[in-house]
Image 1 (cartoon, rainbow, N blue to C red):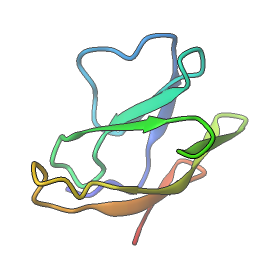
Image 2 (image 1 turned 60 degrees about the horizontal axis):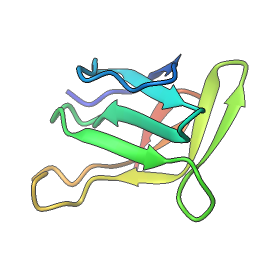
Image 3 (image 1 turned 180 degrees about the vertical axis):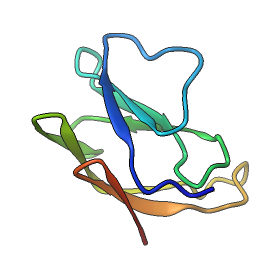
Image 4 (image 1 turned 180 degrees about the horizontal axis):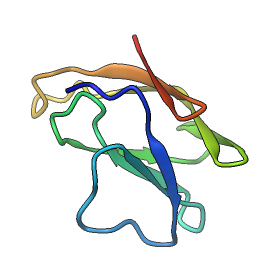
Length: 91
């Protein structure tokens, strides 16, 4: 089932077991990780650094830029979406 929202969880270390609908953010290690919003449970890692993704935090409302795309051969779903103010916007 495709998600329409995601909840930001701030921590130092990304947990081994991820929950759907949660965006785990480690500002210390400059990374954000979540399970793909399409529901395929593919682990999606977004490095938060110049040339990769940027994150805007507006009182816990997170926007990642650019879009998120899972196009690897391991993921047959080829999901493509934006995270804007904790909302999943499908491309």
